[in-house]
Image (cartoon, rainbow, N blue to C red):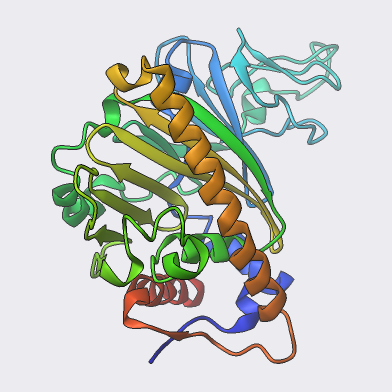
Length: 338
């Protein structure tokens, strides 16, 4: 009877304020895939618990990550994704190079003491793991890869870095981000929420949670009861990297952007080998299947959020099939109390 987090962890604004510093600050968070910033000038923006950030490919061909906020009047510099020669603030046209240094500021040449070097965008740590571009507010943070040695063994044989995007679906989520992570990290719910999609193929009662011990990950291995179906491996890397691997040729990435204690957005990104990506029928089937599964998951996430904010809410009593939630709660609690 392992216990989950206290109910207020899912809605309290003071808890979220601490999360911004201790969960989303100082930990590696995925922003995009490396192919999204492959060419000099490419950029992708992301909201890190309310902090606008941007990842770029500089003219020198290097990856850079920084705060996406002008150092003049705090205007957000760029939105979405694209390719630019430089980042120019739309408010007063202060212009920043792709590495975050200030290149130009109108009508400042004659200002006494104005030093462009003092107005660089805040830098973030950036690294690539298996094709994912991750950022960290702590530029001196330990690299993520060495923390995932146990997971690397699970992913041996999966061509994660070589898969190509075949589609994406956007979802609005008016509930706490941890409910999405927790729902994703257990298959005990398959019989109740996915009786006609996942349960007949990957029965939840035959799933096996595997935790990373002191490493910041867990995964779900599934016993398959239908012949000819590829194995399913569901991976959670704390706090927000959520890739699922279907055999060796399909990956589904649940890309979460957290905006507040009761709001996040989810983009379901689907990847496949180039051979599978060229099969239009396969692509259509995969996208429709994932659209159905994600829509089914909306019911428990909405329902649990309504319950956990009620006066009758208590810490969850976890089933052995939900061991991944206990592992996540322990990691989360250590970080929050650090």
